[in-house]
Length: 263
Image (cartoon, rainbow, N blue to C red):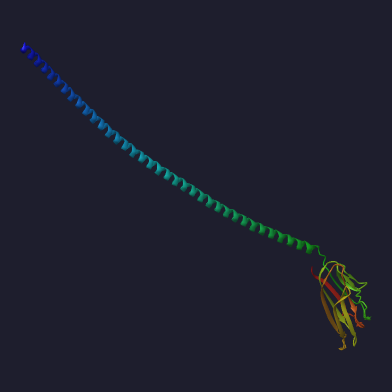
């Protein structure tokens, strides 16, 4: 009995040892699996950490690349805009300068053309004016000896030239039909040992005066001239300022001449 009990107890102990050994083996296996799992988990953490680091570095690289791209793009755009603006301003200034030069040249050319046209018109007017002006000149003389008293007009009845018909042989007066500068000349021939007091008169105003007395015994002659600006309608004549004794023969003429010399 005791032997059976001990045998059964021993069997139980052996079974327990075998079970404990199996349990221990299972524990060792489980521990190994746990260690493997922990190792794999550690490796995964390292991999994840490495991956996250790589992703952060890549993100940083991408951010830097993007920032550099934007900076380069901004610089390029600014440079392009600046160049375009400078080119536009240069072209605008060149165009403005060219336009100003063209306008100045056009003004100069226009001024020259206008001046030339004005000069041509002026020349044409002068030519037409010269063509339209009636030549004015007269020459008249005494037909015979004449004695005059003070304030008496001298009448020259013999007319040789009377262009413009301004001289009146009945009154001895010249009436200007064309305004301008006139030259008047008188030749006085005085009887022997006589004298003449004479003046050239314009509208009653004295232009020139002379006194002459002959002592040579040859009935001497002298001349007297006067130039004056004469208006249209003005009259010019000769008048004695005292007694006058004129001679008129085939050898000498007492005469009166007038001519328009400038308009």
